[in-house]
Length: 114
Length: 114
Image (cartoon, rainbow over all chains, first blue to last red; front, side, top):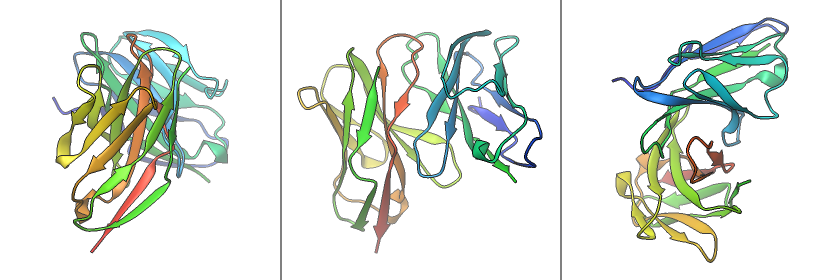
């Protein structure tokens, strides 16, 4: 088990383009979280999946953002019509079903919108 | 809802000196408490966690934290820091219910110099 994996690590895109990030959680973990972290701030919660069901979405997740976890394994986060304010580190985390008190984080995808 | 306040945005210390990073939280329900460390351009690594029981929690890399329910605090301490401890430290809280997301503070930058 190699932990939570995120791809790509870095993404530079032009304003107005769409981007998609992928997260592969730890294999036996059924819970998956997305966070956004801007410079000098702590991670902010975006959304949460239990298996394939998206159970919670933050008000930070505007209509331009969509997340999926189609088979309860990997997840994707898509941002449409990117804006400069979307520039941030996007972090994925997963936790286990039983005794899942701890969230394990991936190394993140750093998005730069130019 | 929960919230976290990290009282110091930056803490500069000399190598081998003791350090305390302060964290206060608020919540209307029982919570779990965590400290994470983040090195530049990396994801978050768990240092330690408080779930229940003994209020003094020991973690990795010689760090420990004390849960104080009456003061709603969870301060992180290390008796002697190393240059390699230079990083961003985040205090986080979540309700002790399955699947709830972590809420993070804004972080404290620990800078250790020789």
